[in-house]
Length: 246
Image (cartoon, rainbow, N blue to C red):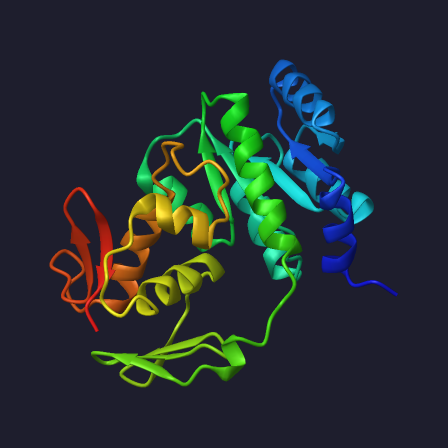
């Protein structure tokens, strides 16, 4: 029997995946469904948080596109319940909010990426493709061959995806861990935002304007730096990107 990754890999090779769109704006939901179905995907819709949760359990989607502002239960509650239940299906959150804290909360609860309304259909499709490619990628044993990595008082175990700071575990979201490893593996060299989007998020359109990398860098600093506002390890290189001082 094929694993979930193998099944998704076969579907995405053909351009098709099962998508659940949880959006209470009927006109927007219809428009997005048409675009996604034209792309070859199977789309199920839900108009409130509770219906979205029920649909996840019944439809078993490959990707959930989740609006944050929903009736019954908002997107935060839906995301929290899914992750608490152990549902690891990738989630792309849609938000009309521009406050960084709202996006950060989504990432903290287990979202994989976000789009701020209004957005273009091209950008939506690019994000969907990137998330599905990443989810379908077969696991490799490369991490298991890597030794424990260290910088400052931080220790990284790539094989077990564990991070310790002064011996205490640090809870990193999956993309935060991947971003940290992408920086560490460069040995102090600078990584541009577009480069990181391609490597960590598998974006096929790296020129898309997004603050995804910046938000994740902010979170890494909050969790790993002694003084996040004056970082000594996760550094910004003006007009170039970021680097990890190891």
